[in-house]
Image (tube, rainbow, N blue to C red; front, top):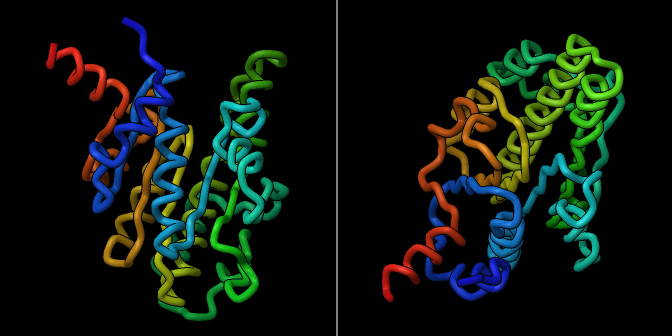
Length: 237
């Protein structure tokens, strides 16, 4: 029996997704992960939340969540990866996280968001340094340089999440983070843990649970919607 996985997500999303949870979606390619994230995005936008998309697959055409959004909608604001000079290392992010100073240096970090002028759908393309890391391994055969590039990439992801939660929580906005194929580290977990009492939701899609690192413990709900539906349909026969 063959299944149209995109059609499965569209038909069964409301029955299987629990909107009150922080959800991680784990599955292979063509498992409907991006379609599921699009449905989650629409859910929060329809309820007046700020939605921030963080995507590392923008250089992979239609596989990218951001690229699909750009084709289907006009009401978005895109932030591309900044220069390395605007990305702080993990220790600086941790220091800012623990700072109680309202006028801390982190207020000037990327991304600087004007809440009054910004739209509700913010797109963050963080693919640059991840792809440069792959290039270092595949073409330059330089794993040391690859690791440097990937450290920059992970710092950019963490800095973006920190600045988003910090910016919008201060102004008491409801924010949904949606991350497609992002590699996290332990610093991400510390950021989310510190902000857990604030009003935000995080939903991620990855191929492998190992990409989640410690933040796997942060999620309330693990979902592969397509596999769940197919299994249930087969059980009914």
